Amino acid sequence: MLTVKTNEREFMSQVISWLNEFLGAGTYPFELASSDPSVKVSDKKTKFPDVQIWLNRLAQQGFCGWELKTPATAVDDTELLENAAEKASLLTIALLDLKNKVVKRKSEIDVHPETGLSKMEARLNINMIKGGLKVNIVPDECLISIDRRLIPEEDVEDARKELIDTLSSVADVRWEIEKVSSIPTVSPCEDPIVNELSTVVRQVTGGSGKFGEMGSGDLPHIVAEWGGKEFSLGVIRSECNIHGKDEFVYQKDIEDLAIVISRFISDP
Image 1 (tube, rainbow, N blue to C red):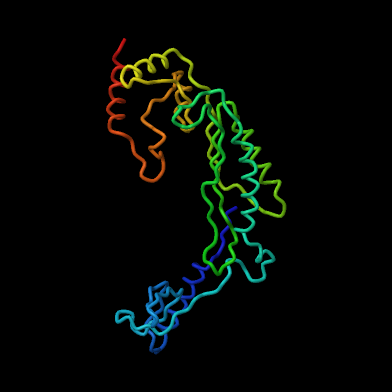
Image 2: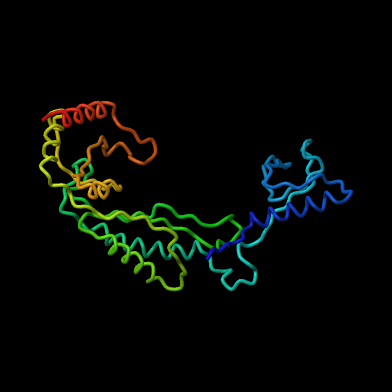
């Protein structure tokens, strides 16, 4: 069933609609009502009232501004004082405790030395927390986004159960899962063709190796349905800040990659 929650923005829009209907029906000195204008006051500060009543909008002659102080939930709601952001912090503490256990899990698969690690490691990161409408409103919901990276030795269902058990262990907090995206782990490709590619990389760049990468994608499972072999080759370095601010790759790496692919495909 679809659940719709009202908030201050919806209430503000309705109030402005009522005011303009009222002003348009009578002979009042006020022209109209609008929302969230930028208003400079006498102390040179800028205010952003929820509702602004105008004498003349074009001439920027305002009459008064209103700041709506309505909670995000009904005043008779028994859960009004349950601050969702504060409740979410309890879940966050439990997740961080779980993280301390998760990151200790090591794979048997080597990773590139530039990562500072020797083996692939499991990961659990709280990457986004969203909640609240304004500083003067008790938030009625808070969204926590979690990124759980599995090593090949782990199972998706076991990881999901571990997360749910952790959240369920927190008392007096109501929560629900909004969306889950998951990709099963895959074992490393041990086919001789990987050694052939590694040899080409060494010939072009002077260095090579077979390493695990803590990435994700649906290609391995598509290739498995095709009956093919899946392995990856790229130009990611530890300093490239992949998926982050100002991510980049070196031009020389791209040029070398083109040579590697060309030789790998064309050599018998």
